[in-house]
Length: 442
Figure 1 (cartoon, rainbow, N blue to C red):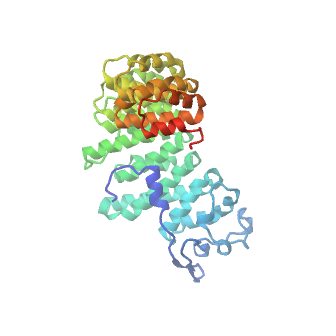
Figure 2: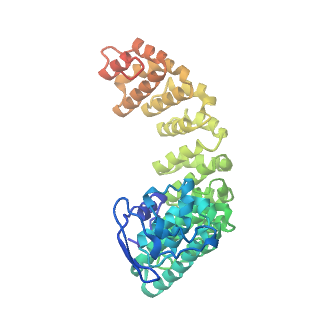
Figure 3: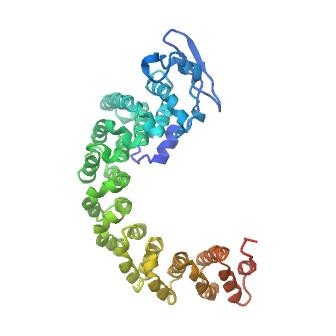
């Protein structure tokens, strides 16, 4: 499983490191006492065997309040609660204890990461763990290869995930993570997780953004890395750059160049990164319009349409003009972009004009949805046109028309009146139900 170069997305990695059940644990304390932790749904980790009692002058826990007295109830600790802070010393001890079960160590690390700034004392310990695991993994890979190091890879992955959860709070780990990300001896999955961690830290750490920029323009690979793995790795780094938000602005020229890449996934991820920048990526509008009109992949063109909706009001005019293009696919994409545009109300006149004579059913219903959502008071004026074409519509479009009528009739009594007034002869049961609806769904 660790030879797969695909990136471990935040959701997938969270599932990997947080989904394991607690297991019974048998360990010995420094004094030689044998300790068995309970298991099951309400299990807690008795931490006497993994954390030495702290002295009263530690500032965090008194000698009488040792982890052995309280345990660590993972299931009941809410990271956002004020009470969670008192568990930080115990969680740090568990995370750093090499004798503790791996599943519990990563549970502790991820819980600390979710606490964010309130668990900031854990960050130096996490940085030290990263350094040690990286050195061990590097030595193991050099001597045995990737196939022989799954445990170390898994550990480094959850350590990096914990950093990602901390975000800017973990800025002090950036130097260590940059070394991991740029080390061609590291497995690709580990390097991908490292770039995600850098993106989550963002500009809080000097060098994080520049490291991502370097990976976008001059990525380095081991000679044995296949072309497909290299391409997928680059696409993942572009996806990580989207996590930077406004901090990705210095990457704008690079992102525009990536729209000409041969790989579909790289182009799509570059568009997503531009969308995350929003109006700060206004300079990319000509390049994104070019993708919408001429890219050979439908999924990329659709992503370009969604991106144009986020680049500011200056895209409204060009998108409205595209509604007059002879190619149905172009009109469909323009309608899709306008439907998602936050400023679409400024071109409603053009949308109404086009809707009255649109021949493509998908574009037609998209324009109707946009008009009704942007100007709800005008929804009753759209009803006659929707019902007039009912019988000639494809089933998928008919479903969209029905849902639009249902949604608008529930909000506006005038829409229900218009439906009753313009029902076709021998209407289907679904339309009769809409006409008889009292506005409460009955």
